[in-house]
Length: 237
Image (tube, rainbow, N blue to C red; front, side, top):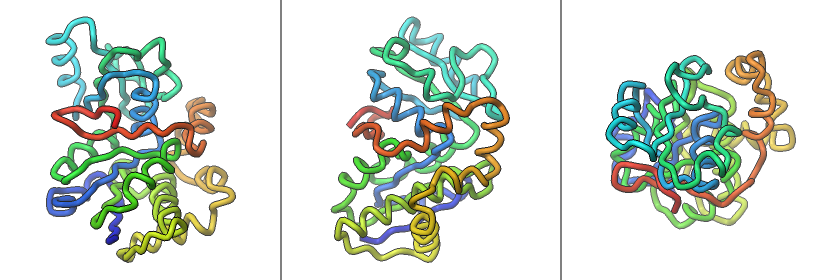
């Protein structure tokens, strides 16, 4: 398996993902939200790049749409929920479609749509992702980052996926950055959340009072739910 890692949403493009399985990662918090919503019964998740697109979809599909997302970690005016995965309980999302726009994660998804297969990962479904992709030949892990900058949490999650594939006996051929994030995870595999707590974005959320979100986002393997791109939306595989 050839593995590449992309550091930010802005670096993802068609040439980077074409013909490959792409796995988008935004631990804090977009992909954690997407996995959680589908786990709890959402029928689909539609990522859009701006709030106007979300409002348009809700107007066209009355009654079945929930609007979620953030700008600068704050709920978007007029949206139903922000970007806390803990908001998307079964009572809220069961049978509904979540339309979501975030600063980084939805951009990473949109920039990765030329992939042969497009999946979504976070720590909460990492094991299931590894099991699914273990026989792929070309894998690219797309870290969303934060406003065009590298983030510890996404790199650690990408590193965990590579580490787990190796531990499962999958022969991997890593690009230099993939080797770097694997080494980062291996160095901190017993204190991932504590190390990520040194990062900028982690502390933005902590200072805004999202400590429960942070704890949840760094919990390993809460579920086996894998979001996959099908016909204009993410659905549960």
